Image (tube, rainbow, N blue to C red; front, top):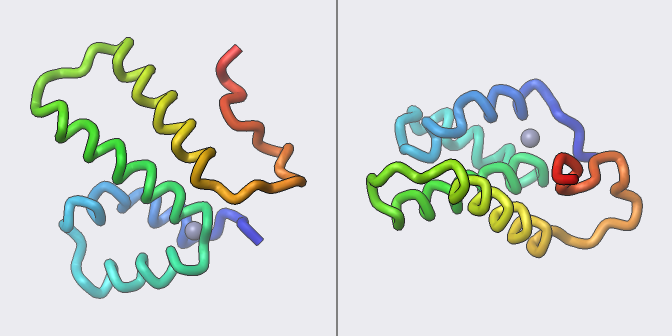
Length: 99
Ligand SMILES: [Zn+2]
């Protein structure tokens, strides 16, 4: 069952700290344990991780909004590719905000 739990929400708040390595190790362990059982959060971490990597590859230059939009789209596609196909996943259509 991929439901947003309290821990999911907490994790979302602390995700950037987690990826930056700013969290205490006890909390990191907790997050990692949660990730093993939660597809939602795993995808979230993975996506953010890729985003950060991409931004780092771009260096410290500011990314124009258009590029940012394209990046997001590419990331979303990557995400979809990495997701196992789900027959019954029509509650959250991917890319639903794009017309
Ligand atoms: Zn979760």
